[in-house]
Image (cartoon, rainbow, N blue to C red; front, side, top):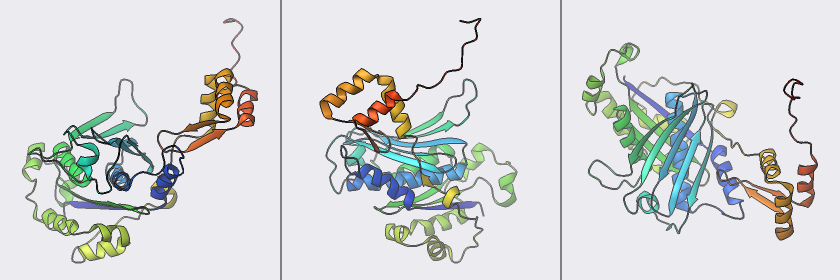
Length: 319
């Protein structure tokens, strides 16, 4: 059948993201609605990256005019991921998407594909959609926004079920493929013909209806085998080996103590010593993951006592 599906269940990768943020003494933990949104974004980002197998970073962003100014999930081609949100106001405990990001109707969702090895002049691809439907109704679920995006950008029917708690972020994606059976490899369907099939394929409609019946609690609490058996017990499933462990989704951020040390070295010893005199230590937090790096006077002295990065000797002719 012209239907493919993917399911993801993030556990350690998701709790690592939350733990870093919660341990940040400046920001503290995200409010519950923001945690849920960010978890759904992390799960959706992994699903989309796995679906297209893009050699580079897939960056999912939602931004707008509410107390949550920006939320970002970034997934690399090896499924390493990170996520963050910028909160500049009070987020009600029961806030939905529009209350967090689309108060005045200016909210947007952007998906960016940034190639790992860019060719000269090559730019990242970005698609942007508003956080409302075709009739300008505000969308309250991230899954609805992304389904709308996929229909507009790819002309493919898509069902997306997302859920997140403090321990699990999970998602199920069902998508109609352009052609049936062997035709998937033939590329014989024109763009217009593919558009004409939107909403009319009976196989897809049946499986999409089954997928849509999956509840948030089921997605968060049941293992993958149980979910697939409950939803599609009458269907023939062709399954791939799951990607887990070293080849599966995992948290990774590019920040490090060494990179922060290099940044402080670039500020100069006088600037760092003035901060030490005022505060007693230097504290730098990663804007993306929230990890904090602290340097006491001894640590700072070691930064400037360490030899600078060695440069290759300049040829005598240039000297």
